[in-house]
Length: 129
Image 1 (cartoon, rainbow, N blue to C red):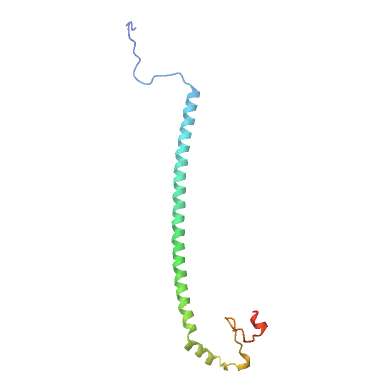
Image 2 (image 1 turned 135 degrees about the horizontal axis):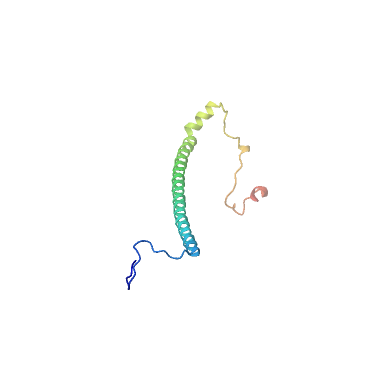
């Protein structure tokens, strides 16, 4: 039997408190909300990084397509100039055996860009165009 007066110490270890279910439930809900918040932040971070990567990839693709279009435009311009030159036209005329000749004078019409002097007669159908 222990007959000591004064301070009575409990043995070291867990101190039992009254078990309060409501307090435990509140702390569990807080912990779940904390995990959900952290998960949402991580998910948002991953989503934004994925969108940035897709944008960078699309930008690179657009730049590459623009460069290819520029090269194609330059190539077509050179081809256009080559096709407009007289040696090519002459070769096509001979290859297709076209019998080209100058027009007869009655087939030629002249259009006046500036108004004729006041003493010159002009066909009204031609002048109205």
